[in-house]
Amino acid sequence: MLGSSKSLQSLSLYNAQLNRLERENKVLKYITLFLLFLMLTLLAVSSFSASWTITSAGGTVYKTDGMYWSCTLKSCAYQSRPSGWHETVRYLVYLMWMLLLGTLTLSICSLFIIIFRVTTIFAFLYMITEKDFNQQAGDL
Image (cartoon, rainbow, N blue to C red; front, top):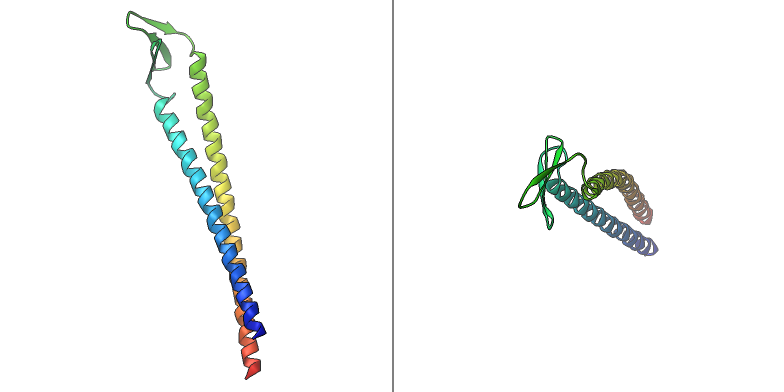
């Protein structure tokens, strides 16, 4: 009877570990999806490798073939370099890429940790079942 209570304790410990792993995986999944969504949104709004258009209160800014054009309702003017706002958006795009790469790296590390934990859990279960089997064989 004492062995079965130890088995129940071990099983509850195993369930607690699995629940914690599921929560960690869910958090990592949501962080990754959120960052991926933000990254794709920023890239859709301002793709600096192609042509884009941004409309603001001051008019419309175009980028075509590496040239920036600032257009209002009356005229268009060539800008030799992007404004501070464009540089901010470009910086945010780079920042989002770094966050995304960091999150993917964290997810890959988490995957290896989970693989290691699963093998540990199975080894733990094997140890429990073998002890129970040996105890039952000794009772006979």
